[in-house]
Every structure is written in C-alpha cells, then in structure tokens.
Image (cartoon, rainbow, N blue to C red):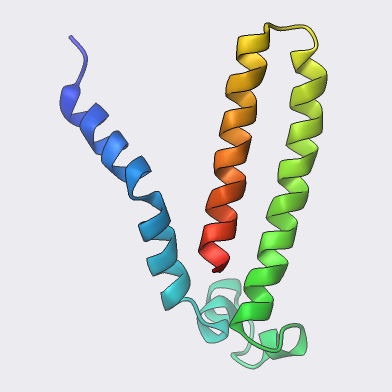
Amino acid sequence: MPDKSRGKGQRNALQNNHRIINETIEGLSLRSVARRVGVSHTAPYNHFADKQELLAAISTVGHEKLYQKLLISFEESKHSSLMSSLKLLGHILNLHLLIRACLN
C-alpha cells in the first residue's frame, strides 16, 4: 500500500516551492554566504556589489546548466516518443519559470 502522507507532503512541497525559495532568497545575505563558504564577511563584496548581483550570477549559472541539460535531453529524445519529449520540455519550462519568478 502506498504511503499517502508522503505523497501529500511531496505535493505540498512542490506546490509551495516558489514560496519556499522566495523565503530563502529573502533571508540570504552576502554575509551569510561568506559564513557558509568560510571566508571573511567582506570577501563576497570583492565579487558582487550586492545580493541582487549575486542572485543574477547564480541565475546565470542555473540557466547555463539548464541549457546544457536541455541540449542533452533533446539529443536523447530523438530516440524516444513525442510524448516523452513534450513532458521533458514541460519540466524544463517549469524550472525556467521558477528561476525567473525567484528573481522578480
């Protein structure tokens, strides 16, 4: 018998993922990033003017990775069904929209 509570929890997390990410982004600071990576609290300012610039850089890296995965997936989808390709494209579009929503 499937674990229905786990399924419900997963659905709730996925439905609220944009809110969770936004809360994480709101609490993010260059100081907290410095603490996490083990550098002085002023070190991130050598690379980023502010939190928005850091988020833009993170977004750029994320979009580049997404693009590479898209290329690989489309290459692999040449050997699969149209429905599988459309589902994959839907997932990629959702990820892209989530990243854009987090930056607005």
